[in-house]
Length: 420
Image 1 (cartoon, rainbow, N blue to C red):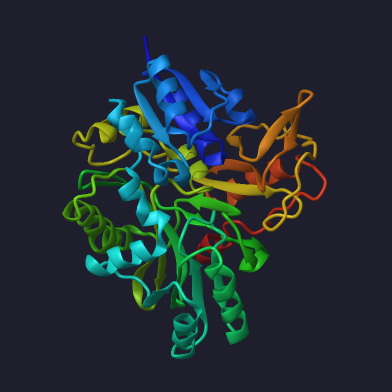
Image 2 (image 1 turned 180 degrees about the vertical axis):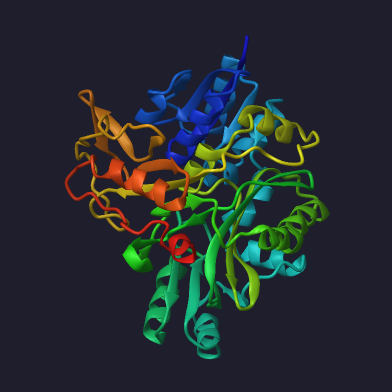
């Protein structure tokens, strides 16, 4: 009899994790809280209509089902302390406790952590009042980056090139709570994700996200409009540098701060003339980076996450498909400011081809029809022998899918293609 696993979350990241966990010979059943129509359609996967941030509901369901492991997908349940409640109940959890999750839950906390442990990052200040924040702006050259301190689903960041724009962002974000203002860094972004378990660091393959809504990296920031893996700007030498300067000091810093950490640690990096610097830490897998990573992962995900959740010795390396995987995010009309729901999605069946997988995010079911139900709706992900082939396959599948106002970028992978 195989193990039962619970996943908290209902986005594209959680669909990809559920899909990969269900492939394990060690796993009998996967329960998604709350999941989405995509997870419900997977073999061995079931949705549970519970609230993932409600610790009492989650603990009760985990006990009743006899789950061997709970995997926390998004950041909100981590910051809410659901992992802590599960651990108190004796249930193995992959995902940090609430104290560890503050690396993502508070930008100011993360910046102070990096400064304390010598991890390279942009110069910064954090503020709770308008006056000191504006004084800091006047004393530093443009452009500057203004960030809301708390969780903002990837949309609490403004890169301001004019003082009026910077002051407006300060005023708007301070209405939510504290803010961080930091120097603008030149270079190319990359996502470096590792499994961290009690000071151990096991890196995943490199990946690159595309944060802006529009082609050419224009338009507003989003939660991510596409990603691919591997990425040429994280070669062996650069990856080793990131491990040496960022990931290992972070893992050791958490131990030094007496903050037990067993989960994914995601470093959003800027690689440029100033070297490698950390833009942000996240305490979970990136979305949409998870989708291409899970397409390429060959190691048994369940065994890996259970080992980390127990704090046992991690393997030295992971197995990866040598091919490239690329994900194109399809977003609802009006995203990111005012996404429209309830539009019927056409062409999902036509888009299922070899080496292509469609991961659901903001979808729902109405009268047996899949409809839009969130900002980022689908992640169309493809494998190919090259980045160009993976991209061609993904966009061929994208062309089959339709709904009114559908948005997607047409240049996912452009930086990698330019390099090659």
